[in-house]
Picture (cartoon, rainbow, N blue to C red):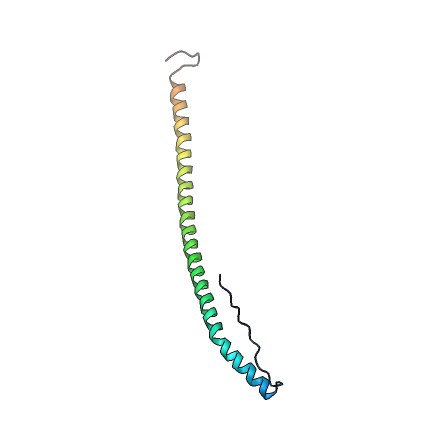
Length: 102
C-alpha cells in the first residue's frame, strides 16, 4: 500500500513575518504532492474494501452451501440407519428361533 510521505511545517503566529511567509509558501507547495498521495491511498483503500466485501459475500455463500451439505449428509445417515434396521428385521424374520427357515 502506498504511503503519504509529505509532512508539513505550517507557519504559526509566533513566527517572524519572513519565517511565516517561507513556511506558508512551503506548506502550500507541498499540498499538491500531499493531495496526489492522499488520493492514491484513498483509491487503494476503496479497492481493498471492495475486495473484502466480495470475499465476505463469497464466504457467506460457501457457509450456506456447507450447511446445506451437512443437512443432506444427516438425512443420508438417517436413511442409511433406517435401511440397515429394516434389512436386519427382514433377515431375522426369515428364520425361526432355532435357526431354521420358516
